[in-house]
Image (cartoon, rainbow, N blue to C red; front, side, top):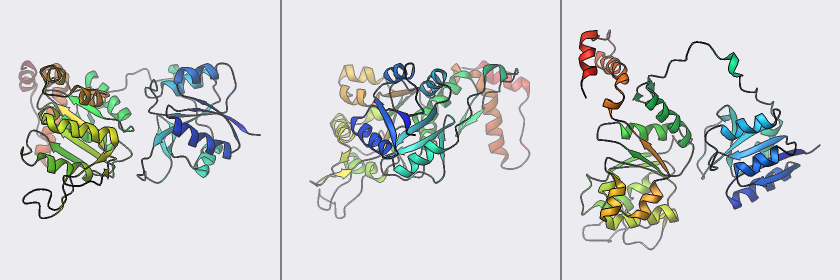
Length: 352
């Protein structure tokens, strides 16, 4: 008997490809482009399985799968993520406890996922331990178990599996680059290059060539072709630190790169494919930059898809003891770690 499958995907071309593969697997497919429409269907008709793209607006982690299981407890949930031509690690992939498949779908992977044993339902609330679970003190190089940091850890875990731009905001020294590296290392493309770019430190006369590359003879002194930093990232991550310092004339070129997914090196008419994810960071108020004309409004909107605000330490003082232990362990270099007395720690906690 054919399985009744619900496909939830925003992209029309992706819907068509996925639906065709599902029909080839002898499935009866219903296709929807929103979480609300999918839930309305689930409340009215029985479904054996649901395939849902994690980039769907309103997905928010595991909310949609959880709601679907509440509506139909026996439903099989399969999550989808765009591959973009970059091979993922071998073996079964999972996200939020659910199987994860890469698009474009293949018949054999879909068939295996549909025939696999159903995942156990989430544990009911009453089975949870009565004692509170301690907050993680460290996450991918970030240190702190405060609620504000745990929110950042959860957000990193979500956006790491997606390809749209991320904007990290915070004062100097708050750890914006650590957040960017955590996004890269927790995503399926972690084996691809991570390319940091300090927009404020690049020489003004070379910044365009550094970012976009050039061909031989593009300008005086260009004796050899050069690959730009954007192209060097492949399908990985470009971390553009201090994006607010990027000259206004280059902001338009970066915008075109993000919109067209291609780069044109200086002096070349041949575009180069651009697959990397952009993670930008700033300690400036970009909205103020838009108002005073130093930052393009259209680029701001393009980057402002997901915003992670990193709080300064004075706003999360409860993380200071964990940071003290972290740095003392690093200083020990394998020897027994030093300790700080409660009196000294209280002094640390009293400072802004």
